[in-house]
Length: 390
Ligand SMILES: *Cc1c(COP(=O)(O)O)cnc(C)c1O
Image (cartoon, rainbow, N blue to C red):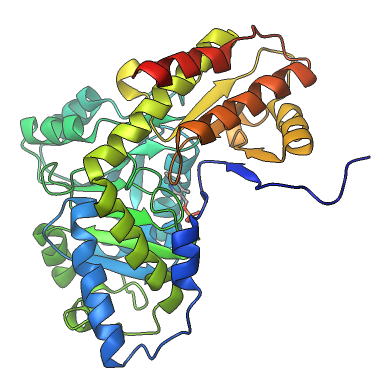
């Protein structure tokens, strides 16, 4: 019989929503203010400017009271027409959901099949676009960090492939689980719409969706788009200039966002990226020492956000996760759709440090023993040795 009271903090090691640091929780625990008053306008102007170095963009960032999925729909519906052809890649569960959405909206969404162990192949982008001489493909959609597999697509390489094909398609990138964790460059990589949200690398609770826009995307929205209202960029862009919104923004989440941006700037974006990369490497060293298999097969695509770990045949990852939750009060990510029961996912993103990683890996190693999963001891040791010297 387990105690009902669990002492100490819950280890929330799913790859989003992530742990919300106390600084952000405190920032949000303030009275809600008038979202049409002068103080709000000042705050929102600061936030809308402050988001630009997070996306590495010079143009506007739209903030919706929505989940990331809403921000996907906004990207598609503002820029495309029903029946337009778009190119998508089956990198995993989230790419599949985005493709389903595009199809439901009435887009002609081509889906390049994949094995859920690799990212978007730049050579396939180049070949497909080169063959599309009539330029019927209006947008290329990529998930930067596929959260179901722990595979990071090389967006800079995708951009170069599009340039080599001299193709005018828009480039949309889902950075929902990579923003403020992995190196990402909206302007430099010529991305037209970057889709993000609050509850992963930004360390906030769920509830904010983002679209960072290029000039080309704004022009596409002026000329066309689907019938739309809630998601309409034009309705946001005008009042945003003075720090206001066309409908009620998520005021207290914005208090949190202001604090999150301040924290990221204090640490420095490049340090944030290096921290995530280092924790990813330490985790993979632990997985290899256990003798388990990493879901991602290409080392150029390893993720600093999460590691998906395959269990040996005959062992169920959800049964293992249940043991870890019950014994150590830690939530690990589950395998999604095709990978259900086959992998568990270790989230190492957001407000996270060396000792949080050591605690997480210790819980995994003890859980493997308790669940009877064949493995070698010493994963945590391998991770510690790396953390100690790097
Ligand atoms: C979490 C996630 C989503 C879905 O975001 P919601 O906020 O749940 O709508 C989409 N894409 C990726 C890559 C994700 O990690």
